[in-house]
Image 1 (cartoon, helix red, strand yellow):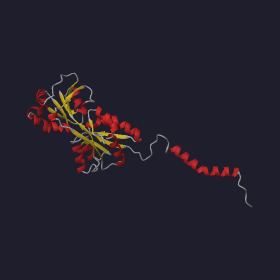
Image 2 (image 1 turned 180 degrees about the vertical axis):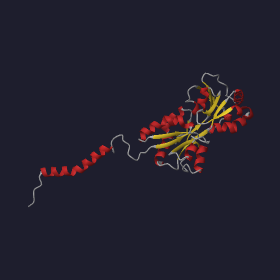
Image 3 (image 1 turned 90 degrees about the vertical axis):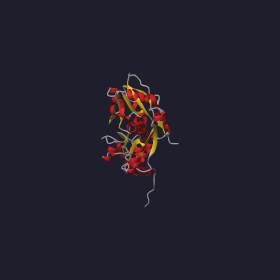
Image 4 (image 1 turned 90 degrees about the horizontal axis):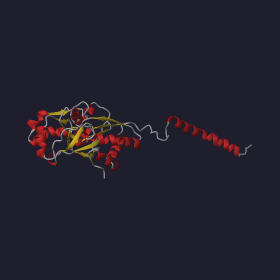
Length: 278
């Protein structure tokens, strides 16, 4: 004998069918999956290695990327080149975790050749000029012309320069070009694993040379200006995806963020010329 389907029966059946769905939703709520503001489990940390020239801009931009992407970014800092323990080449040689590397373009291309960075992943981010600084309150020497720069370097009792791109240019080319290598190089000190501006602020050097973007954030110094145009060396700082990256898609997402038009004003405030993607 068939039983008639009543409204009460339909209500009971509907409740029974809904139970598995309700249970699944409850489980999702307990684990946080799908809840607002909670990143999905595939959003692992991104590891970045950046050299000093881009550090100030990167530090200002990173929080915005973390908010928009829902990912945390872990950072290691080091020079673009050289064999200091904390230089980017040394860090990569020790297989420290890296998804994105940001450094001088020639050094980045060398890492591509060594198999440490994915070919074709390089993106130019900024152009960076070299400048000079003195201890805060000290007399500001004239470096406005090549002749004035030469006189200032000859008169300076001590000069600090970086172990990265700007310092390599200073010790291998600039002093030779000015014809004062023999007189000036003996009183010049190459600084490892520390900002040149910090050394000048302590009074350990009378004059400091480094990327402008690395001098501007340092307290206790006065930035006196860039090298004259005739002897200026502009360095392009670029980003690439590490070959060992465990998050290559996220790495590319971060690089696009740093190269976006929205990032340009922040970059420009740090003394760099943004090379924004068109």
